[in-house]
Amino acid sequence: MSERLAVDSLMTADGEVVQLPTLGRLHPVDAEGGRIPLDTVKLFDAEGRFLKVESYEFSTWSQRWVVHLGSGRDAYADCCYLRRPDSFERLLEDLGEALQRDARGGHLECGYNLAVGLCCERIPEDDVCRRSHCAGYGASWMVNDIRDRIEHLCAGTVEKDRGENK
Image 1 (cartoon, rainbow, N blue to C red):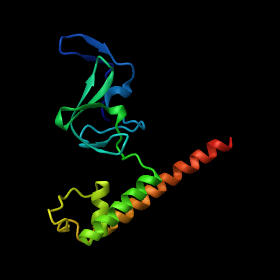
Image 2: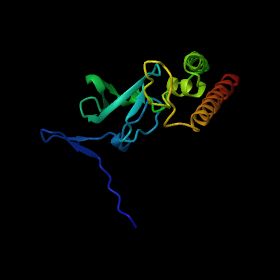
Image 3: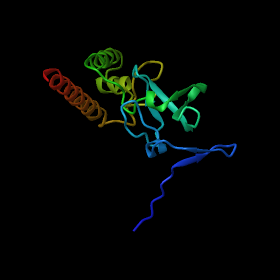
């Protein structure tokens, strides 16, 4: 049997004890309500841009989690996304970018994976992917990501359709 510790207050640096409104504040939550693990190093903003996370901090003043980003910027965790916000238009843009990169580099899957952030390898000046780290996996990463995105987007469309019929 394991013990569980429930925390209902925080002590600030100056010794003030602040009551937490709910136990849900013990960890950051993203804009969609998903729990953000404290070891998460990448999030996305509302426009789908990648955000590199340096650290997390709970603000007793605002009663919100603050995400400290690279370059000295901060954001509230509940304004960020664990998954890149998506739409059919964004999917088409990513596929178009992959096709443009493919025309220059010769590897469609690498172009797509770079466009959506699945691959973090830096493309050299000649814009040709070396594929050393993802040989054999790049195409499956691309296809799986496209399939997951379409499923997620279709599920959202079905939910919207059901809501409109009521």
